[in-house]
Length: 389
Ligand code: SF4
Image (cartoon, rainbow, N blue to C red; front, side, top):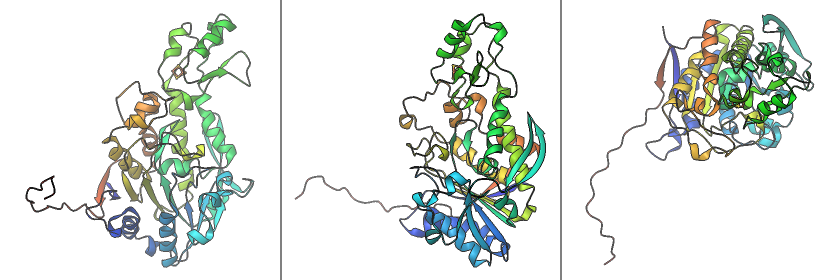
């Protein structure tokens, strides 16, 4: 059976509040039966509250609606995010007064409150789930959709995968990209050649390795797989290999499997707001121009189906190339528009493919529009002369 994803379009038939996205969020929460499910529950509302001067995060108007729904249902909500974002959340408008509930760092103010889970993957042994997440009895995963430098797309999966782990685990998840060798220095004749390879990258993705002098380090985030470096590198000295990119995607799926594994299946709900979608994630601490048209708001009990629906919806829309920063380039127009920007090895569907393999959810879904946009037929009007009589 397909998973149900509830959807609210950003479009309106009329200029009325009840047809706007916050009102459609209310309808989605009704369809998810959130109020009926949270009685006496301690509800963690996991947001990304942004960083520094970023403002393309989820507006408090939306968050307050979720908080109110939880309170109406008899639950005790708190909003949470990783310490370095939560500790400055008030600077971006997230306060207890505005939201109606406290804002906590997920793993304590120094990220030393966590539960350890074991799962071996590409050099990782343990995963540290934030204590405030695992202590909650119900999880509302409220994510903002945007681009991401390592997996092209950040949405519901990404909000949990990185946002529910401590900093040490977040760093280890990123480091999985370097587990499989891509630099073979023995096939590079000298330092001059090595420097030429690094200089061939227009995105500064290849640098001298800090920990292993004499080797090259690939910044996966900055690499769009243009392969210019391979035209300079001696045969076999450097690989730009999908396996290194996919490691991060698979680690994200494992991370979510671990976090959601601490909740009973019916004790988690997921919502994605797909507006003001920028090229990279909200961790960057600033907001750039939107690169995709607003796609709306989505909600589901199935996190995989949810992200799949957001990706399918945004796949139908063009990348707004004139809004890209000049430093970014589009060299391929195949696949999802976010892949045009971040490269084919960062297929935004990859995290979902792995998540489905790990039993986190399913990619097959049915989209239910909670308030279809009514078509309005205007009566014909007569000719209006441009000249005044
Ligand atoms: S593939 Fe392109 S972006 Fe990636 S390291 Fe090579 S030159 Fe740089």
